[in-house]
Image (cartoon, one colour):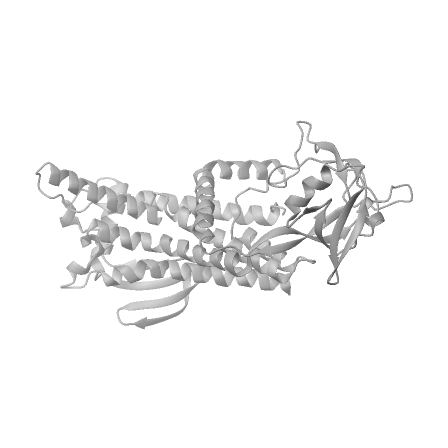
Length: 436
């Protein structure tokens, strides 16, 4: 049941994100006088629709996107000099112009999208991606300010009963020949909160860890809080080979693939994970950092797709940073929601964080300057505006609208390519899923 709840949460929020994305296009278009004939969430057969005013609102069967139909997206032939249609590419562009012109009602040519100024076109086309970014800001604000970031405090989650070698299997248990762990021998218990170590007050696990590692074979006083009272215990850490971790808490692996170890003081305890609320002022920086990371991923998307194809051909496991599709995202959500031993707050935080990342990905992906993505329309508007500015500076007549219908063949090609990648991701997420 929890698995299904996690999947449903992602599906609902994804649909809301799509719906709000399209509202980001529709609202400014209407404010600028453009007639919006359709507002649809999804593709394929229409499940439900209702016409209000001059717009038909509806929900379609395939919830993998959405669209708003802005009347007059392409300038008519007479506005761009009636270019000849000698090739099939030219005929595709001509047909697109004609279909766009047929949507313009008599006397409403001034309400066509192609008549908008460049700044207004940019507002309309950027409205969708910016809406996704705003959704991400809200979701990350909830996670950072409402819940907080997961951190390790000084409250003990586990106290090992023995010292298990660092290179032992993960499921290794204590045996009669194993040496007793110093923490258990000193009387530490799960739930104890370490207040000070060898006279040094500690407030976080990052402060406590180096003190323990530097005190091997030395008996030191440890003050813990237990059931509202402070107790002083005598602790003698042993010197043991333990894995080396980097600044991100990840185990450092050597050239041969085995974890690097170092002889340090060892107690045999592990901390509880706590949530530390952040300031509202931290949200913009966190969003900016996540956005930059996502842009870097989008920039390497072709290489990642090639790696995905190679993994499927070779039958090798996919990397944890492999690109995933809607099936993989749904599986992640289900696994997060159904993971045993995680507090509901941690589960909610993880789901909200994943949904925020998804909206940032939609923001970055839609800005790729290729039609039919929003970035393609943005690039066309900038090109049109740039031509007009150059003509104005040179004292030339104002150029007519850019013939965006010429981009229709490219838009069809990109659409087919994205569809193929989407099907590949569905297949890979089912047959060879990323393991988390």
